[in-house]
Length: 193
Image 1 (cartoon, rainbow, N blue to C red):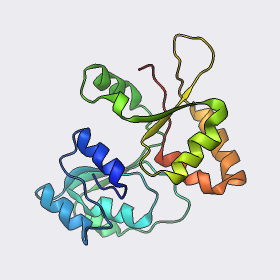
Image 2: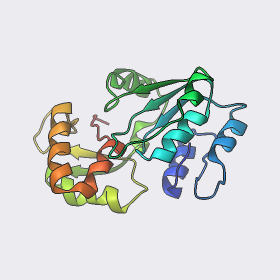
Image 3: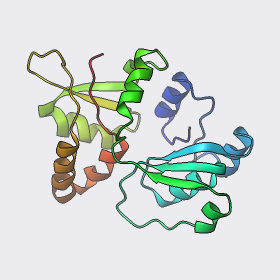
Image 4: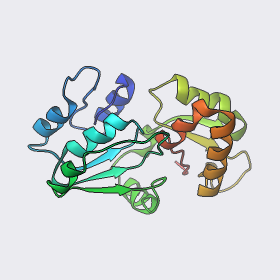
């Protein structure tokens, strides 16, 4: 894992990462990844929306490696297309982890990773700005924040639908631009733990 936050880096190790690279402490992140993976990662996920990180993600993959872009970008990001072509790498964009949730839920039920350790905070919907977005802005150690449904139902936590996310993005990008880029870094999902 490549992570600036020491708390999130520690959580990555706790959850099974074999190494955490802090780009503030490592002079050449790509070289370190290639060293740790014997020539490059098979798959790299770009989740920050930061142009240099996209370049590092692509460059850190092996021959025929794949970079998956999860971020929503506020600015243009240039890439060296020959770094992709000459190494037969591929790029893939994915929005809000679409179509991945069933596989993730299956892996969680099989015990491959403890989902409860990914949840760092639980809030109600009326706390979404102060305890949700403001916490994400001010506390880089947060992983996932769940919104709790106040109604008594079988599922006390709920997912934000793509429609609701689109509405939040529209409102926040106009009304609260400083929260906008946190939406794609912290996709909030709900499930009954």
